[in-house]
Image 1 (cartoon, rainbow, N blue to C red):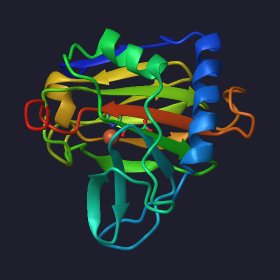
Image 2 (image 1 turned 60 degrees about the horizontal axis):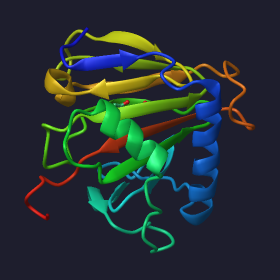
Image 3 (image 1 turned 90 degrees about the vertical axis):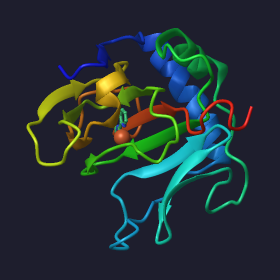
Image 4 (image 1 turned 45 degrees about the horizontal axis):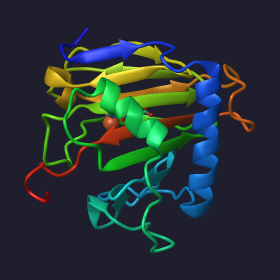
Length: 204
Ligand code: MD6
Ligand code: FE
């Protein structure tokens, strides 16, 4: 496995998974899922998104960026719940809290192409990912596009920490296996990724 990648299967037990879903339900009422647009092609993503925290990742014709408000409601993103912050504090090995929690929602047929998370200023902080609901086929390669890749099944409750060398590796979601979990009432998969965006010291 790529160095710096930590895979923690079933890190969250079913009760914790249900708590996370409840927290998300409340947050999504305030900050509904939106459909991001690819900057170059103008095509919609198949994944729907929202964010929690002082900064949220958005994509539209103007490009990819972090911003403090929801692109449709114009309101600030809801805060990252303490339970989610606790997981970061326990697992990230990074002294500051995350600023962004991107929430990806995969309904039937949704997937995510190979990409690198590189819109952040500080790559010394890992990205911590939490999977809820249906199992996904996660693909990870190297730092260059077109290299060898491997796959990992991400199931409900699994946590993945992409730090070190793996932080800038290409990765994506090939597909989601419908009906593999009963956690989400309407099925599908939710993925949370926690990120540090700014370099500490730059703003604190
Ligand atoms: C997903 N995850 O699991 C998409 N990015 O739905 C990501 O794009 C991701 O899992 C950075 C680090 C970990 C991830
Ligand atoms: Fe990513």
